[in-house]
Image 1 (cartoon, rainbow, N blue to C red):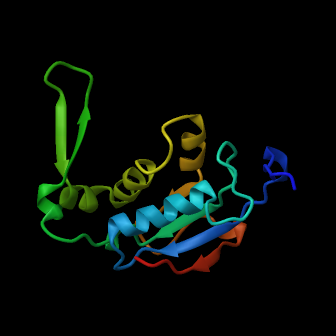
Image 2 (tube, one colour; image 1 turned 90 degrees about the vertical axis):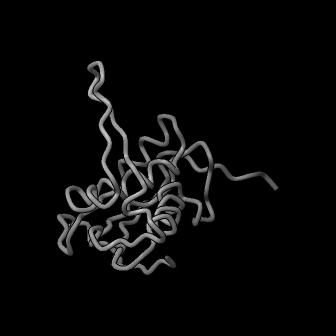
Amino acid sequence: MKTYHAKVGEVEREWLLVDATDMTLGRLASEIAQILKGKRKPQYTAHVDVGDFVIVVNASKIRVTGKKMTDKKYFRHTGFPGGLKEISLGDQLAKHPERVLEHAVKGMLPKNTLGRAMGMKLKVYAGPEHKNQAQKPRQITLEG
């Protein structure tokens, strides 16, 4: 029996909708990363992007445990000398809640061209409305 390898042209993708209300950040991110990679499909192939599109709504209602709201920091650099900026998780959730989940999920994807292509299939929205009704996403519930 030969081993099956999925080809780029024969991959069928689905649009999935996830409601992030009262879900733990890391647990939700790991489930989403598995869907984006395609690890839940029987035709999973490591070197081909076989994952589905994921739409996440209510990203502003994500919860974390412990003192992460104040202690967890996100860092970025402006490119100028002394330009290191930091923002806490609580402030980031108040300003740009979708970036928190995107950052967590992209950290769990491969760090190469394939991983960047997988990350582009993630659509995160802070509120309950999303712009992807035309794709007819299927609502799923994740353990989180």
